[in-house]
Image (tube, rainbow, N blue to C red):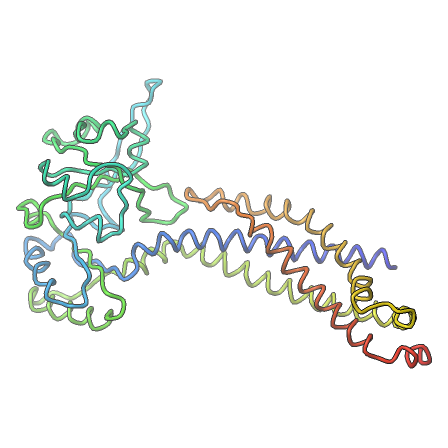
Length: 383
């Protein structure tokens, strides 16, 4: 009977530890997604493909609104822009098809979108040297074998021969990948061409304005932008896209999965608590006489606590050794869906052990402490 109870308790520990471990992995992936989502926090986008030349004067008027941190005028939407096909020539002579998104914007694009330059020059330096320099992201650079030595040397047509014939823009640097869709999708090749503020090209082709709003003045700033928009574009409805909300919505499956695992882990912990509570209560009641005898012979509270916790500690470690590999195997197919995946950390392996150990040892210790408070002589009389 005792062996059967031990096996059942160990199985319960395995389930709880595996679920907690899976939850830590999901939470880590969720944290990674939120780090990328932070780029779009307090960002809105205004415009469409019919916005036309009036957007550039509108952008200039936005400078008078105090709640705006920065703005940038672009030819394309960040989260819903135009995509073209990119043909990559591989070393073995075969061709590989990739997606390429391209944006023409002003000198404030990179700081407004919080985009890090990994290699190359700043927008101010690039615009002082070249006419409409451009940047490419990590994936584009990797797929086309473009490196630091090509900065300031290669032009658009050198990297992508299929680009427009007039693509004489000079490469100014390599930027980090900018996730725009679900992290389950591979980040496409990205090409950002910069122009001086007020450039005629943007006056004609600037269709979207990305606006970073100061978080403490969000509501009043959006209202002020709406008023200015309606004054500038009479008869047109004021519609803006909350970029942060849009990015989170595209990753809602990850958020839902994380919430489900947290719910299951909570239920498993509660079941473990109830199970350990009943078993520990039974174990302590069965050994009340033994506890009293040990107390009479000078056993300390520490010795008694260890005596009753030892079987559970053994079962927890056995369950841990089994549950962590099982949890990792179970979560691996889910993690492989993401092109940007979280790594493994010491905390992910440690937290399941710590949580289950605390819950179990605390439950057993409370029972033991209550029984040990009784007069051992009285316990021997009644047992």
